[in-house]
Image 1 (cartoon, rainbow, N blue to C red):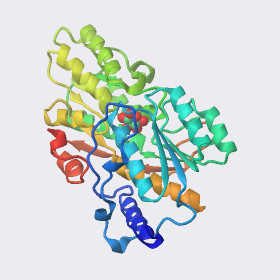
Image 2 (cartoon, helix red, strand yellow):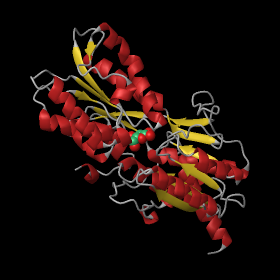
Image 3 (cartoon, rainbow, N blue to C red):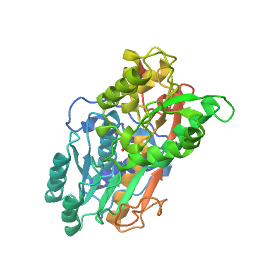
Image 4 (tube, helix red, strand yellow):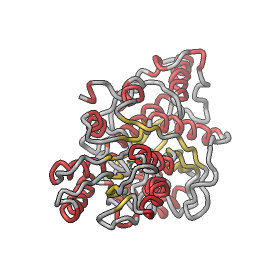
Length: 391
Ligand code: BGC
C-alpha cells in the first residue's frame, strides 16, 4: 500500500475515533461477552470509513505516533464491559496506526503484573492499564517509570505510585448519585411515609472506583437512613460490610441469600436493592428469584450489560448506568497521541483523583442514566447493541 493511501486511510480512521469522543454517537459493533481470556479478535472492528464524514478528517498519524506500540492491560473477560473496552481500544488504536498488545488477566493480580512486565520488555511506548487491584502495581510501574514509559490509568485509578501520568474514566461519584437520586425520586422519599427496607451491595474493595460509587449514592441516601425513612434490616451499611470481592455475581448472590433468609424470610418486603453495578445486581436478582416472596424491590445497576438490560426489559432490574466504552476508548486513544506528540493532554479534572502520591490529571466522561424508557435510544439507536443482542 502506498504511503499516501495509507495516510488517507489512517486519517479517515482517526476521524472516526475522534468523533466518538465523550458525548459522541458514532456506531460501533455490538459486543458479546466472551467466555475466555483471549484477546478479542481485531476483525470485529467496524469499517471506520463509514463512521464519519470526510470533511471532519483529523490529521493522519504522523511520525511521532506511526508504528508506536501501546500495551493495553485489562482485568478480566468474565465481566462483559471489559471485553468491550478491550476490543474498542484495540480497534481504535489500530485505526490510528498503533501496534497494540492487548492482554486480559483473569482477575489475577500476579498475571496482570507479569503482563505489564512483558509489555515493558516488549517495547511498548505507552501503557494503558485497567487495574485489578489499584494498590498492587506500584513495583512494576517503577520499572515503567525508569524506562520512561507513560502510563494511563484506564477507568480505575492506580494507587500509591507516581508512575501514572493520566487517568481516564467516567465520573464515578456521579454514577452513585444517579443511582441514589433514582431511588429518592422513584419512592418519592421526601413525601412518602415509609419506612422502606433497603439492602446495599457494593463493589470490590481493591477497586478505587467502588468507594466513589458507594459514596455518591450514600451521600444522598444517608439522611433518609438517619431519619428512619430507610431501614437497612441486615444492619450492613458500611462500605466494608457491603463490598463484593472481585465484583463477582456469585459473591453478591450468596451474601444476599444470607441476608434474605435472616431478615426477609417471614415475608417482610425488601423495597430497595442498591447495587453498585450490573454484575452485583445480577447476583441480587438471582438471590431474589430463589429465596424471596415479598414485593419486588427497586434494583439499581451500572454498565448496561446485556443480561441486565434483558432483566430491565423483563421488569427484574429498575435502572442501570450506560458507560459508553467507545467514548472512553476514543478519549484514551486521543490521550495516547497527545502524549507521544508532546502536546497538551486533554483533561477536565485536576482535583478529584488523588492516588496517594498526588492528584492525577483526569478526563471524566459522563455516565448516562438508563432504564426501560430510554434503553432503545441510547443502546440500540447508537449502535451499541442490536435488537437481537437483547432478545
Ligand atoms: C467499573 C464498573 C464495573 C466494575 C466491575 C469498575 O471499575 O468502573 O463499570 O462495573 O468495575 O467490572
